[in-house]
Figure 1 (cartoon, rainbow, N blue to C red):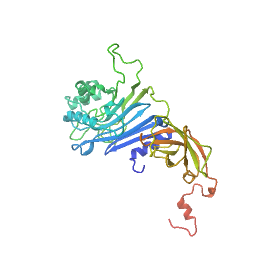
Figure 2 (spheres, rainbow, N blue to C red):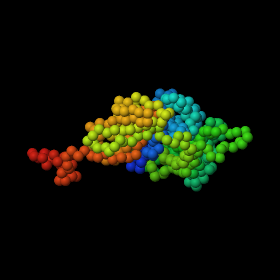
Figure 3 (cartoon, helix red, strand yellow):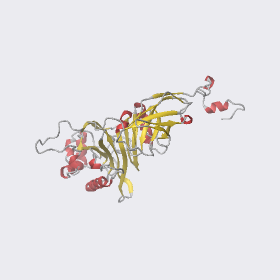
Figure 4 (cartoon, rainbow, N blue to C red):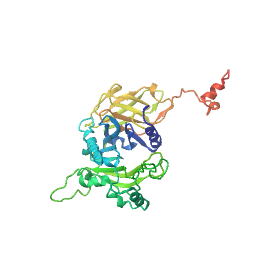
Length: 398
């Protein structure tokens, strides 16, 4: 992924050794949304789609707007929506208008893909830019210094809007028990000391919405005792130690509990026999009856700590490389010339082009190295290529 952004590279380097794989990334100028998942969950994350909507400069500029990624998890639909809404105190209504416009314009490609608000779970977050109205700068700062945040909640524009806008009342948010996250002097914990002296505000927010899968009945007026999907907030905090922006970052940790609607991968695959880097290899796979394959599906050979679906060592098109097909299973070959000569631990993944996700993973297995590789000379171990060249005759000048 040569054109991945630096944040993607950073988080992949940190998270892949911990067993996380990047599912999706989408960027629109300064807006970036990354989704990572535990490797074991990949076969149950399907129909991955991403989309963006510009709202800056009447829809022509991406400095404001929203980016979204959606997928199904164990059969339940989940959507993440990252927004950057208009700034300034007087633009509260414009922020709401832009948010509604983003919701209307975020159409995902594919059959039977719901709109943003029709997902079972929706996480809405970002620099939403809502401010604290009415109170003066001195009162706000004194309230913050004395940790009397509750005095400011009732004048927070987002909280005020939730009281009158029905669609906002469906969103939940944790208590704002941390200092307003805007606006700070760079590399400090001091609020704006410039001539503008902007009033502090909770501009950076994380909200969520759970769609009621089973409606209330007139008889019970109650939700089922055990909902099919639920979200609980474990913590909602800001991080004051970071000073590279005039905002302080905010994080939320959630527990998502689901009753699986699907419990088996769409594709089951495994290596045939013992693999060695000196010989062509064979993969056997079988598919669930409901799975629709595509001519663009492929099987990838991955290191056990691969970083994203395209981070394969090699791949084979399932149709072009098919060598046998039966009622129970099909087989695909991988040429020895592309197998890793040094061998090691690997696994296989089936990528569905329709679902834009890995829908089957094998168990890890070992590939024997190529025995014809030249043996390493212990004299050269740990010696750089430049030093090796300089030890050749005639000597080189550094």
